[in-house]
Length: 258
Ligand code: SF4
Ligand code: SF4
Ligand code: SF4
Image 1 (cartoon, protein in one colour):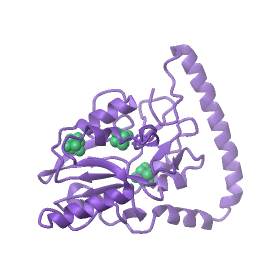
Image 2: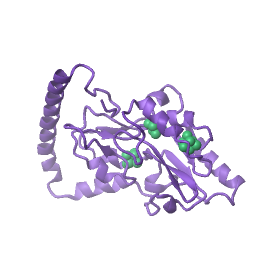
Image 3: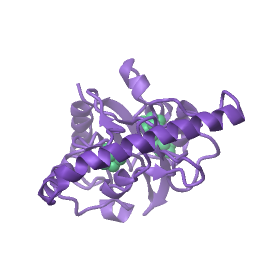
Image 4: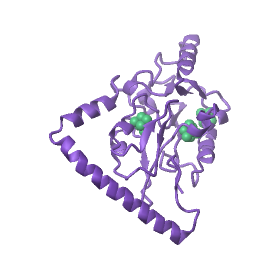
């Protein structure tokens, strides 16, 4: 079963409980910031008389994962697109490739990693809803199978056609996403990209790469470089941990900052 989140902009009351719950669930330092960062994985923004959430869309075919040379990002069988900080070499290809501008970099760190919503993958694996959906008091953020979320979205639109734009955002955008959104205001006015193709950008990325001359030859050299950089990261991180003490280094597989 592929899981999904439905966010209904017309029901959101802007309380911010989702963003607070995300901070707590993922042990992200500092207060919720105004925009998403490596330490704030979701925000709630007021626009056009309703609210919009910003978070990873958990693409069905994630471009971030397809361009990552060391497979630091990957899609789990359940649907969340997760991140392995131990593998990341900090190239930022994922940031450039994401059609929704989601991955954020730790600009304040000597050895930065990426931060983004991982759809509470540990909770999801145990059959629990995401922390943001659990915290939402207004049924604006709900969690379930993607198929059920799509059904629920269509049902809400069917029941109140005057209230909603007749479209489920994420049904086809960028090849389809695990996060679906419905709104009473055109999506582009809510700050969402409206001109994304139905084809997953990931497909086009690989088509482009495979057509670059010498791509395959360069690949081997590149991977050797990756190995060297990763080994260097480990060494530096080890020395940094030894200097600061045992609790200061991020060894999780979730992108959680230390
Ligand atoms: S929204 Fe961006 S970061 Fe999230 S899965 Fe899609 S491509 Fe990756
Ligand atoms: S799904 Fe989990 S990680 Fe993603 S925004 Fe919600 S609480 Fe945060
Ligand atoms: S918890 Fe629910 S109602 Fe509150 S801001 Fe988040 S989505 Fe909106």
